[in-house]
Length: 385
Ligand code: AOF
Ligand code: ZN
Image (cartoon, rainbow, N blue to C red; front, side, top):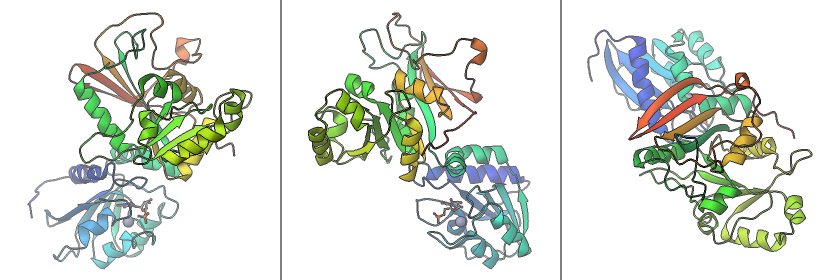
């Protein structure tokens, strides 16, 4: 294979990250992992975690390699596992192949591994160096680490607004705020995140599909917050719910209070293939308890959610500290109108100094539009169960 003179561990780790990201949309809730093996300055094997439940990156790189790997160097963005899960431990094959040194991007937060993988390798006389491009390695798998460490889905709030901060005209018309390139990127996000969430207001006003139209992409699970169970049987979401997994989160007491014919509606929705999820209300309020909802979604293996609002649901998530990332698309156009909706509504804060500030921000350009993304630190939801 290729000769790579004068490459640093960081250079190899960048290659590893490029391989790992090829698993995006296919491996969740497991991490994206890549692996490169180098001997005498030559790359002799490479692989990545391709499918959920399939071989891990290290085994994919090593299993068919015919070369003598004794003393070779192995680069991997996540600490090799040491447990029997869906596949045998990666530490075993690394030891078997007599790898001499392992370069690790970051340690694993999975309690079944968490440092033990590295320890086992060292006990077998393999040198291990950790922390190669550590931040980049953690960032790539921000969803995995959040889900593993907190047990709740990683939530990314996504919205598109005009330069004057509106997500629609006063009339409600919103097709389209951003251009084609930005909308194509949103399809990639829908492929990456396991769930997509919207409030009933968005369903009633836009009748969206909330699917993934990227070639070779996978549809996220659609989750609609609809406490009073108002979702129309002839909405696009309900009509396609036998093909695309759909969860409607509702509250029977709240629905009854508004006089909905719930029993009949429940039956009809279930017949169409909708999964109904009963969620208690927040104390003293008529809104769904979002912490409870996130916990239930996590239990179903949903590790990440792209939150596509509208403004009321976005505000509730933000106020409760449940958002980890924001993707704000900005179209350089103005629509004006005091009543035109904005991306985050609710009550807001009183002082600018208390504004929620994004960290590690990046600015991207899609055609004429911009996208600002960044992380939100702070608290995460403590289960109230
Ligand atoms: C992966 N792919 O390349 C690596 C992983 O469910 P299992 O048995 O496949 O095990 C998943 C755990 O294995 C995961 O949580 C992580 O701790 C570890 N490493 N997982 O899916 C990989 N290297
Ligand atoms: Zn493994």
